[in-house]
Image (cartoon, rainbow, N blue to C red):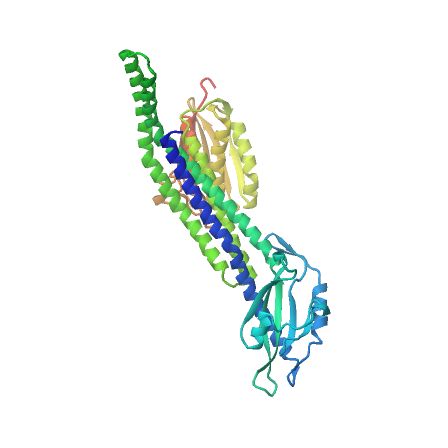
Length: 482
């Protein structure tokens, strides 16, 4: 391996190590955060239990008679709750009550758990009026059976000054919320690995573009060293060929350097917003909040992660398309059948918003090109029109032709294109908010259509239609003699 390649591999390894360390820190921090949330809920439950039990304290004596039937009924309940992919069917909360000496007066799991609990940290501290908590395995030496406990003092207020007469402790198996930790770890690792892979692929492409021209010169030096005899004409021809190839590749690389820098800068700007939303939601999830609010913030994280994923996927597709200077294989493509197929695929999305798709193709036309790419281009234009069309309106697709050109027009009856956006609609990552959802797309769809049109020696135009709405027109050269 050459020194150049070793340096490049070293940089990639350093980057991979950095990403791995970051993911490791995030993943190992999930379990403590979940435990803190669970402990906070246990503290509230303990004080709720203490308040209920204090209603049955008379002359300093704790009456626990109604606790046994209460917990028997609680444990007998059958239910089905789907919580972020985790299926819960039974209550796992446990509780026990002690007197002022630490002797157990009641235990929700049965009489075999009675005894002297005064040595346990939760009971000892609660009887002193302090906050007590502990994590202890049910089976010695098996951490998977660990249970988290939190306690609260029981006070006698009837005729007294709040004297501590006992303690109540509530507990919950750690394994019950460990399922949520495992699910969060898996999602974090998947999102992190996909992002790291995308950056590594982009770095590899950029490196090949920038380094390869200099490698040609090194190859020429190696060629000269292998020559057994000196032949100036042969070496001259070889040098001219190498220099011509190097010049072409360096020109492409240098011309593309600003393009890549602009590409990365724009992508970074676009990714910053969903990443900020993910970070904000993650920070808020560390605070106590109702389950409904937690579900809303988790939904925000999933939605913004999907947005980043879609942006990366579309960016990779566009990068591959831009690297093609010509179509590898072409064939005659009948536009009439292609439009019918595209409208059929978009029908479900249109029906959702009660939009009518209408095709007006009085004549057919054939173009020379790639049917798959042309289908993608037309599909993007129709999807855009559906997104901006008012509910209950019509999206009109028209096919027209003259002796040399076929024109596919897609019109909606939405708000049209604002004046400030007319020169930007084909820029990468530029997008307008959809009227019905107030959300933006990846901003890569029209750039994708523009590249497909250029590969087919055509053009795409987007403007405002007469009256109301936007009008997109894809012009393509027809097959001669068609």
